[in-house]
Image (tube, rainbow, N blue to C red; front, side, top):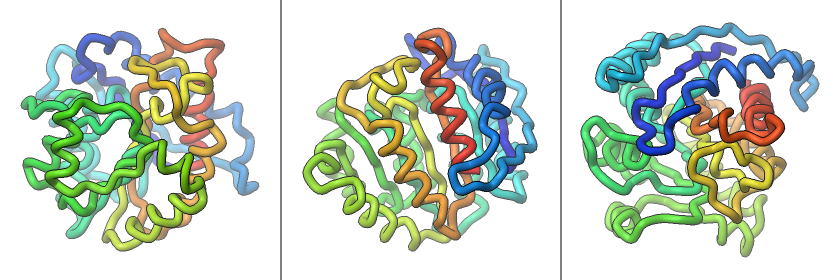
Length: 260
């Protein structure tokens, strides 16, 4: 599997320091996983995008160029969540009807900054029409601003909040997500580590209680991995400086292994 390290914190705003360390920290953990849970051996081809965190426009251009040039499925290891904006822009140029599943505690639709930050990258993708509204699936939401709620409702974006998993069950909601996602020409999956409860992943800038357990997230990802249209994955918002006993970095590495 192609792994691309993107150590960007340029779109991370006030709590950004440390996320730029995540790609190296996560990739360092990969050899500790001898086999995937499927019994297969993970094999990685690791590359990177050279980042200047003082220049977000240059960073975005480099990410877009790298992703557009990919000719194989890959996993992007960030970095703050704004990297998904440039990555998906390039992804959308390669496929006619792309879709995205975003695992996140927050909708990331708060503002419409240009260039976008980790708080508004998804809103900008939608408003610039890089993706159809109906091709966005938000999973694990449990805290949002009122203007984000208004944006999601106005644009009829599919949202599966944590409350729904509690009421309906992980398997049932996963079925609903899979039924939509398999209809896309190409699928991009973005995993903000704060989708996971901070009891399991404390090393991130914006912790939100009430998230997925590690196993619940892995269950969904292992199912999504079976989809034939899955082309690109990213793992973002891990902050080694805020981690406890390396728990979050290890979980991110586990996610990379299982999605490879």
